[in-house]
Image (tube, rainbow, N blue to C red; front, side, top):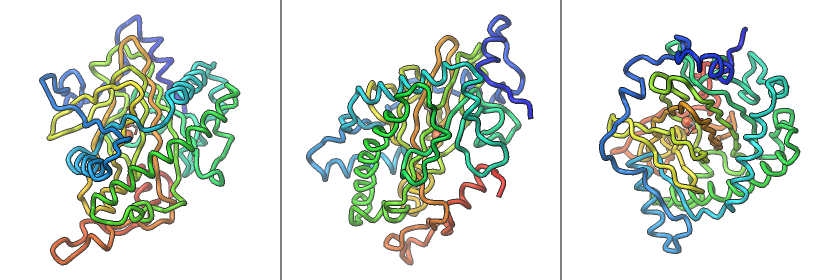
Length: 337
Ligand SMILES: O=C(O)CCC(=O)C(=O)O
Ligand SMILES: [Fe+2]
């Protein structure tokens, strides 16, 4: 299949101020028409170093119920490490196309790992439309699941930086999962165990959204919910993340050094609908490159995820069928089985 890289299209179409038809979203999705421009509440920001655990649990569980997304500050990941992760990722995307293609995702495999583009792979390409996004996916944890052939060798510090980040991000995830568990009146370890315990897999993605001549008409990522348990997202300073709140698309504010926690489908299922997975999308910029680093925290493929038995009663019957995680993935992503 011939592959269209949005980076190349961006350069070609800059002169004409047009983009190929397949990148033009239907009007119901065009950011210029659908983004809310009035005053709207901000995505909640939570201080993860709050020594009052009861308060922290309350804030996190309320945000997961009402928003399905929140930002965390004072999360303990050194800002130098965050900047380093950003700079090695950026360096990779600045390499010549031929170099990046050495890490290309293999066609027709079940695995999403590797370098790809919105043209050949996208979560919700339902209308046959394309998203303004190139990306790289690879597993960063557990070590036994890592396939280093998808990790850039250039720059050389890519590997050590990503290994360090994997360690740090796990600490944040475990703290958030504990709070979410306590917020449901359960013991702190229950939620993590419900989604794979120590077998939880961490998949890093780098989203690379080059400048787009018509950011009013196109999207970086089309509206979707994450299939993950939860997602820890580090954005660069170029705004673009939007969430659907009460049927309105609002912008997520950018806070330097904060991490964005997105509740995914598996937590919605586990909590029997108490916590919500949030619908989100991204916009692109006319002049600047947006980059983001989500880490999708996922159960092993064979892990069966269903509402926690402790939460299901006669008055609160299960809202979801228990299913293997891989079956959720196949039905959402339309991957070959
Ligand atoms: O780029 C972003 O801010 C969000 C990325 C995202 O939602 C995704 O990759 O699933
Ligand atoms: Fe997402």
